[in-house]
Length: 483
Image (tube, rainbow, N blue to C red; front, top):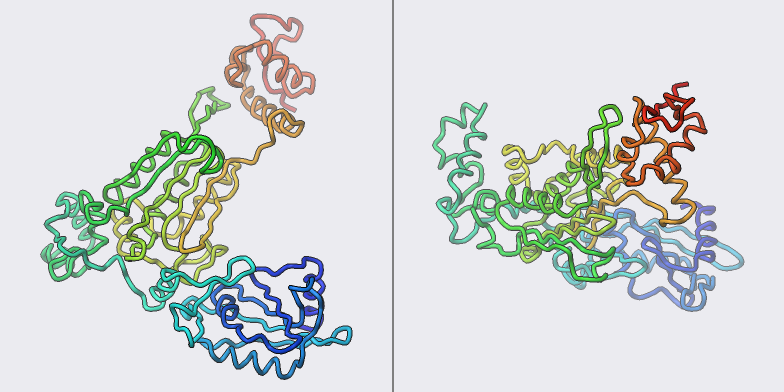
């Protein structure tokens, strides 16, 4: 960083008076801190890296104490960086301010293939750290494994299931897959089915691969009880609110069946609203979230979750709250892709066999178009964009309702009036009776509908009466007044 950027950083520290996920403060007035390994590891293991500022004493009100000796401090920091694997290459900056000297060490984030960065003296498993808020936390065994799995290209979906053979798979489902696989592949179609299964990694040494069991076994949970979906509908906006749940279902079976059953659970529990086509007057029930968006989120959870031995006991969680839908799947974001790049760049695929088979069977496109579709559909419905997060070895997607104002507030009334005016004007593109308008608005009282919605729009010139000289006529209709 430049000298001006360093000064601005010190000023921000005095304003905020706190450390952050990318900022660590060290006093260093009496010497170089002896153990920087945890922070060096944690900053190196996140995309944004981080910065260690020496010369600010957090324990004494963030006092700017300066460092004891900038030259010696830099040397000792470099020595500790050399004890990391991979070696950390900090960018060091020295600043003189108000008679004191400060040092900043910018730690770059490593590529995902080089993580986890760890202290050599403790080894990869015990010397790897991750930044949580303003503190450094030891990585879990699973987090360490996740990086190693990507670096070494482990394919957990290909591991065989002891004691399970192709004879234990559903023959009809398997034949359907084989027929679709051989379509437009004349060389492959000439081979015996048993050879095709070996070539495609469906079985090895007589035992079926995990991905084949998940897709073609009548009941994969016989071997993996927790590779399921736990679906719950909750009454409050937090899991602890009120009763435990409104609906609860353990969803099992092969992946395609789990997908369809989970969708049925959502259709059964999600709120619906009636929408009337402004041109035809036809009423239709619409789910609060776009169905294809929910489908894509569930497909991603089943296809891209981690199927390693570390997550065999962790089901996918589907939770419906009054204000949101959450889907949480084991296995954080895979590979080099960051959350902000989702839907914009081609991602690494954790389970290519499962992804390809689901595409072949018609359940997924496998064209990296799912997340853009989710965003587009939520936008078209005037709903917040899907919220994606990856933390602690879990990937979570949240679909939220449109933000609303508290009923009864002035803001709520204004929003209600604007929405009502726009939709009613569109509905009245053809002449409508009082009763039709009340039904469209979902209001039982026709006089109230007239007083609350129709007459104000007539006064504003938005609607006009077809029989203006007889306002109470039974033949009276209301139509949008075209400019």
